[in-house]
Length: 224
Ligand code: MN
Image 1: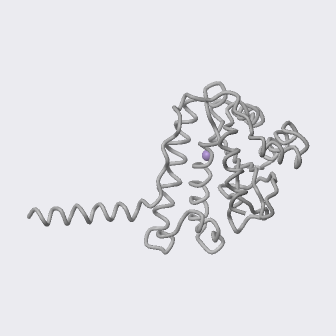
Image 2: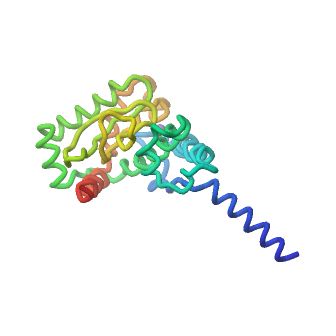
Image 3: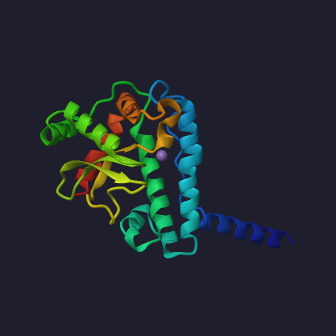
């Protein structure tokens, strides 16, 4: 009887595990930590409803397929061969896991010397870069993302993708390793900013985690 119970529990655990390959990382700060730039209610709904939904739907969509045993990077690199549901939710999961680390309540973080040098060389100045990045987000029609990425030659570039696509996907025109991603879906800002996406984009710079962006930049370069 006891053994049967354990066997049943093991089976339940195994089934849960099989259907929950991907998980959300805990948010590295409180929902209200970015107040002033991004309000607590937006952060809570964004993390617990929208982002959580992408993980749940991704795990459901890959259940029983070879993707169950693949990494998120493997999946993203071949989304052109997979279903639209996998493309949207794998992108959604990757993008949001990245996005939470792009933000911080810590004031006045700065790009590393190495990143700042590359930004100056590529865009002219930090201000010119911010303007270009904000414009990429503002000009994205409908839902999507603005990106700063490293291309295959180690050069920085700014781009924008629709929906939950990202530069790691084989379907996008401008491919690279994202080092900064800004969510411009209405769910990321509408409660506080309504239709004023540009105001949200301006406010994001106040809570941007330059330490995290710099670290990603250096990691991306070291993989070249
Ligand atoms: Mn979002």
